[in-house]
Length: 229
Image 1 (tube, rainbow, N blue to C red):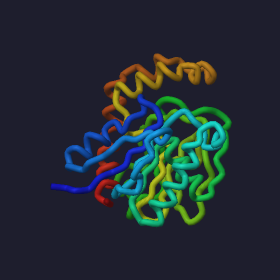
Image 2: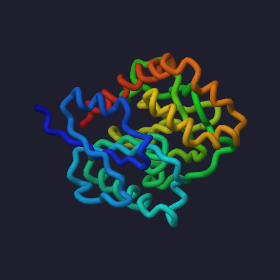
Image 3: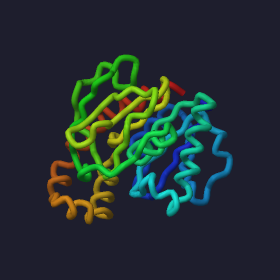
Image 4: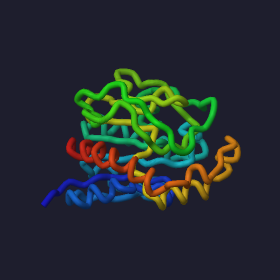
């Protein structure tokens, strides 16, 4: 029996761990999903940390007090040398903890876009193709943290993934999504699509095929991160 336990920080109901939850369950890894707005007890009682996405900006600390809490939490897990992975907003929180500048991109990156992998050796991207499809929903981007290695980019965002030390990863893109997650995000944040003149039907077309394509890489990548724990 695996006695490992992971803390999953979740910001909104519809941005769940997705397929990562299934992978943890298959490996008998326990996990707790917490929203640090109110549930902030025993946050260091875990073997690893996952920080999910959300519509907030890291630069809205005065509006969302939990952002500073999460930044400090990342620093604690780094001190304890415990594995961390952040997705979308989660990657921005990790980057901020590592003193990166978080800033608004020239446009929002929404829907299905390819990411290009630059460095794969000794990372969770090892032996994968150099370019693959991912799901995106972000407007903020960040500079590469000091002492980190850039792993991926896209046409819209220069830093799509980075590694710090050997077990801390930031992924601006989503590979954990399910069909429900995509449908819920597209419905809840349709105003983002309108602001970028993006047709919602283009995102939802061939949805099963796109989700499976993304998940096929996601299962490999997230399992490799779970191996680090």
